[in-house]
Length: 321
Image 1 (tube, rainbow, N blue to C red):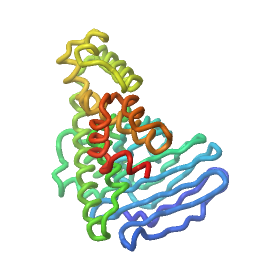
Image 2: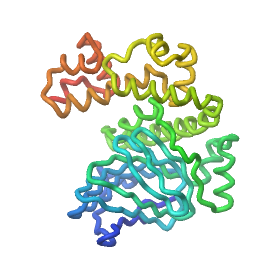
Image 3: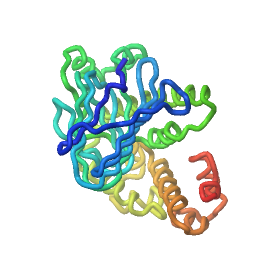
Image 4: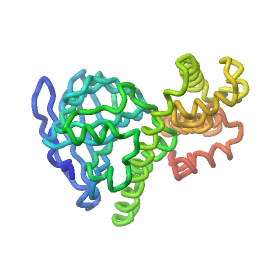
């Protein structure tokens, strides 16, 4: 099983960064790895299980820099970017720009990843698996044949040169793992179950990619335009029928191919983006809850509060308190 304890962090200008490692809530298989420098602050947290581990990192960059993570072990798994676009390169693979809400499936025999980071804050999560996980859980479908071949041949591999959109199910699951707050024994089991769910959903999203080739390039272009329009108008994007008319698409094709291309229905994408915006406004502004509800497309505060509680586990007023 990959051992996250062996990871080191360095910069291109100052070499190896001293770091402090500590356990989380007396859980021997959960710990954080923190380093602070005048260039950056890094907090790297992980939860270790039998044949996989979940990790999430927070980078606060004061001056543009290259951070290098090194581990003398293989990396087989996913990298998922939640907010700000990240540029990075795994040793043996081309450099890639991973946009927010996108994922990357890779395998490298020895982990060395260079993050090229501008000033700002970044949240990245990932899953590293032992190769036995694929056969144990039956992840041996045709869509992952090349991955199996790369592992057998000890050859660096990236599933797709164009990273995939994170589905709404994946995006909504990650905060539940990161923010889990139960009693120690329950917390570990909860995170283990949710991480396994995340792995299987992410593989499902990867397998769906094989079917995206059935969408014509001209339709893909229109669908990306629809996606961009929705992201810019989450308060009132219009109905499916209105969107289809605006972009010259058949309503049925819009619904079916949008989900195929982005891994989420239009409704699910809209709900996710509304809730992310709502959380940001509730936590970081003094706007009244009713105003935030309106900004996020809700005319009824009760309906907004119910949706917020269903998504985050508590009403917006509790975040304020």
